[in-house]
Image (cartoon, rainbow, N blue to C red; front, side, top):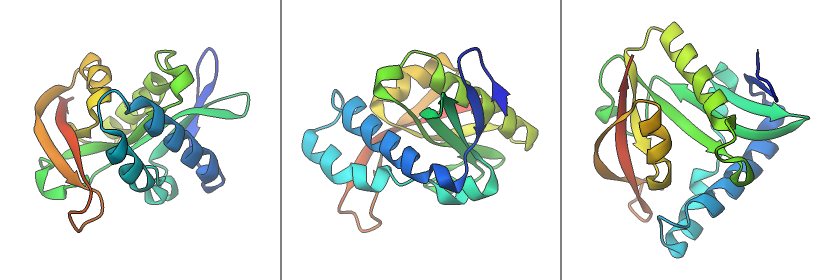
Length: 171
């Protein structure tokens, strides 16, 4: 557990699932509106807002909490949503989200710092993966470089293709 000035960053636990789901829904439904069509957001969010239970169980998903309220969450994994695209020795930032009312308050940065520390400790060379259009500025400020545009198949059957930007960070 890491304590910041205002709150704490800790490993998430299964009892956080409902709060993380609410956070993801709120975040995606509000923060994606400037970059994606409302119809796409409506169809995509139910798939995107599912907390990564596998990462929670493995201790690779973190929350920023203050006074019992979760304001940001995110994690990492060795595999990404498109494993064939992830360079050998790299991991992926997974579902980094912030409460819309707390964007630019440092909550997501605190979670991101934990992701970086854990990824380095795990021996990864860096991080590579997709980001939503609205989050590119955050990741660029953290040192990521753009690697190209793509579409993620959220359903596995091609019915919901979601535009993303691939980003890479070397440690």
